[in-house]
Each structure stands twice: as structure tokens, then as C-alpha cells.
Image 1: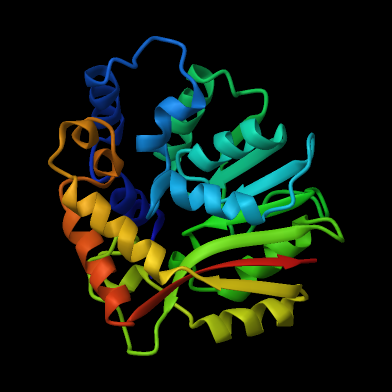
Image 2: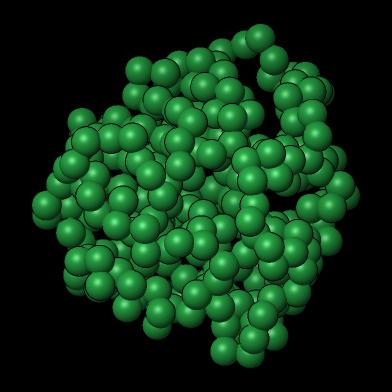
Amino acid sequence: MVNRSDIENFWTRGDVHSRVHQAMSDAGLNNKKLEVEDLFPIDQYHARGIAATIDLGKRMPISENQRIIDIGCGLGGPARYFAKKFKCLITGIDITPSFIEIGNKFNNLTSMSKQVSLQIGNGESLDFENEAFDGGYSQHVTMNIKNRKEFFLEAYRVLKKGTFFAFSEHGLGPEGNPIFPLPWADTSKMSFLLSPESTISLLEEVGFYDIQIVETSKKYISGYEKMINTKSKKDTTILGIHVIGGSTMKQRSINSMRSIKEKRTLPFEIVCKK
């Protein structure tokens, strides 16, 4: 079983605070007022970065002033983007304390603290009342969730009736297990992939309906290729997901791309209703 310290160590790869501070300093972004967009290269800590966030946002029916939950918010990049775009209020939770600390600092730097609130939490046991939110989403989190049904049950519980739940993930492909290490797991100890069919069945069992799924393999292969091939350029070496992911991030990304190409994994997005 993976404990909290193992999770923290995996995601932070050492002193993540110092790495982020140094990268921000090198990019000339420390101690100045920033726009949400200034942080896109570093705070969209998932495959395809801001492009994946924008794509998911296009499918989410968020209205102004709605209260939305981000389960597994990371550094809060998607939360800040959606809060600004839709003029909504977002509560983000993540199991990694360092990500929440950095994310709240980023909220202050971008003057988003009134719209975005980030706190430590576990997606399998949400500390919120029933039907507290007008919608919810999760980006590239479920691959790490062993008890997927409990995760979906908790999302269902905290959402109001008639609202939506959206998420993106790398599902299990038809050709078997992925190649480790990966961006979300160094070994199978932290990776719990499900096929799209199994995922849909669980959602239906929990009570979600009108489940819309879109396969995104080609987009992710293209995104990985772009990231890997431009890694040495100056504009991507200062701020980038490697600042968070550490020195192994490139190889983990290559393995993820290869896993998709070999149909070991299958990325997809889902939007469903409660």
C-alpha cells in the first residue's frame, strides 16, 4: 500500500519549493503581479498542459458564480484558468501538501485568491457537505486511484442534482499494461488503470448518466512529441513541467507516449451528469 510520504515524494521529487522559486526567479516572475496566463508553462501539471485544460473546459457547462470542485487540483493551474474564464468560484483539493502551498502562493501572485481556494484533501473522502457544488472535474488524477468507485461516489455525493462531472485520464488500452516509469507512477504500485468500458460501467453504477466519452490518443501523442522535441529550447527550460517532475520527467513522458502508440494506454475525456 502506498502511504502519504511516498505520494509526496513521488510528486515533489525533492525540494520542489526551491526548484519553483529558482525557476520563477530565472523567468523574472518573482515578486511581481502576474496574470493567470504567465503561469501556464508551470502550473498546468499534466500531459498536454494548457491545451488539455482548454479542451476539457470547452465541454464543461460552467456558468458565472457557480461553485465548482477540482478533485486533485495539483498546483491549481486549471482552477485559476476556469475561474477566470467562467467567472466562477473553484475549490481545489489535493493530497500533496507542497502543491497546495505553492498553488495558494500562485493564487496570491495572480490575484485569484477570492475566486480559487486550494486545500489539502483526499478525493476518496471529500470533506464537504452533500450537494455542495454546481459541478466538478478532475484532470489526470484517477490513474492513481485504487478505489475508483469510492472516488466516483464521493464526486457524486458532493454535486447537486442536475449538474456535471468531467474528467480526463489515461485509461487501460487493449494491448496490456503501460511502460514504467510514467508521469503519474514510477511503478505499478501507484498506477490503477481501467479500460474506458470499465470506467463507464462504474460511473453508471454510482448513478451518473448521459456519459459522453471522447478518445484523445492522437492529441496526446502530438503533445508528448512537441514537449520532448522542444525540451532543449530556452523557452521551455525555464518554466515547464520538468520543474515539478524533476530530471526523469522526459523519460517518463517518452514512456507514456510509447504506451499510447502501442495501445497499452488509451487517453480519454468524459463528461457526465448527475
